[in-house]
Image 1 (cartoon, one colour):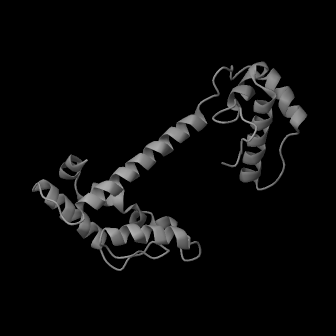
Image 2: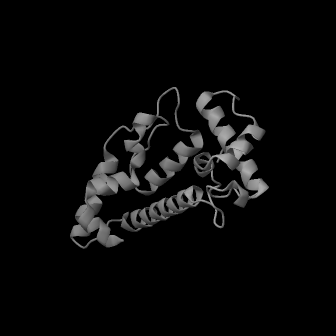
Image 3: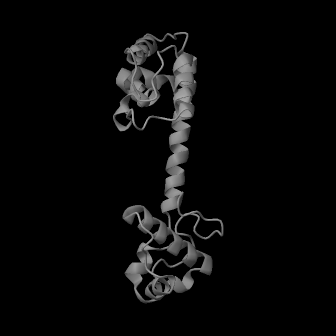
Length: 183
């Protein structure tokens, strides 16, 4: 992990450790981060000896980028600062979280094993119900209303139209009774 610091550069480290400073464009005074999220970010920043960030993503200085420049310079000289071990630990946690997220997304996108995505006869009743629930949730999200095709029409189309079935094939945890289409 330490070798990464030598070769990636300050901007890589800055992007990894302090992405909150880069994501500020998605935050506004009208829609700030939660107090809990801001406090979590500021605990990390305090551990690394940089200035706090506001709930809207603003900071009063460039201490985070300067921190990264110092860490990279030290790594290139085969030295450590008082913050190197903490930074490496946080980087490792960030990378592990990204890996977990990627695995979770891959699992959610993968078609449930043991079924033919084009043949709804290979799906369980739970899968059919969850597929409908996912479609209805998407309709409510996109249309901001409760208008979606009736369940019986949905079921009929699943069994008669392979393209329709394939696009609604059960994925991720849709074979489970406690599936939540909003997750």
